Image 1 (cartoon, rainbow, N blue to C red):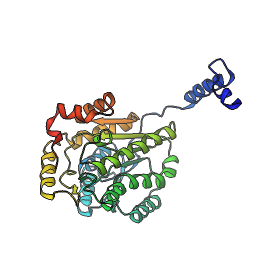
Image 2 (image 1 turned 90 degrees about the vertical axis):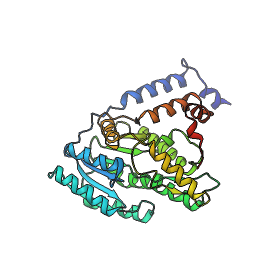
Image 3 (image 1 turned 60 degrees about the vertical axis):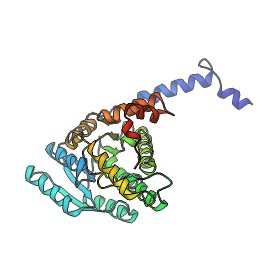
Image 4 (image 1 turned 120 degrees about the horizontal axis):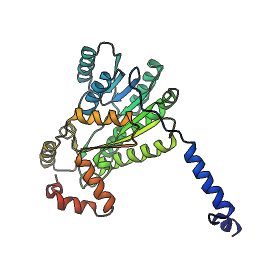
Length: 310
């Protein structure tokens, strides 16, 4: 009882005063990071063979950033590297091929980066995969695959590269979550779980590294990439209907990937904690804030096509 009473002292009590002063002091003690400097920096970008990752490579190269590009598609990755070199021959480009669903491959990738790059200033965990299907339709193995690529791999790379990032003043980490890291629609249980997990990890990391390493969580809306066309369909789902639904969904992905990449790069420069891209991310985010338990009903009323199941 005595400990409880001491803990509930108000602002004029000793405990309350100490707590208030401590919180204010901690807030004052956290310095704001200067804008990120791209010229001469070294950036690691995963998922760099296409979509936003490819455009991030081009945008960073234009700003004078040396690149470590990672993807599982060796041929397309080589094409991106060749394009960067043709446009900006002074930029150093290293390509590494890895399957991020394989924990051993991720550990090997991290070791290769650490061995090859004495300086790392920017880590962009951009790679991601999609899986269409309800929870009941999705096997444990399929769910684990999504979590491995979308969540476990970014965590593992961040853990491995964080010491190197901390050695460089003003370094930065970007994790690409999703619109479905803001809302969780039916038929996206595994994908949403992975992206909500990545969002939570990124937000906690941002608070832990405040004033030392910048951290940005990105929530893209309908970006024109191949993620819908390349998505897997859960083994228990109707394959033909799900594939038709994903092709239809692909048609609404219209926001240009190069503009999305530019938004991310500007977010890094300005040390934004969160970057929402396109109105298709902003409107659902607002609905989720206003109606945290019933936002999907509100979203369907605004966009009836969203309730079509694959």
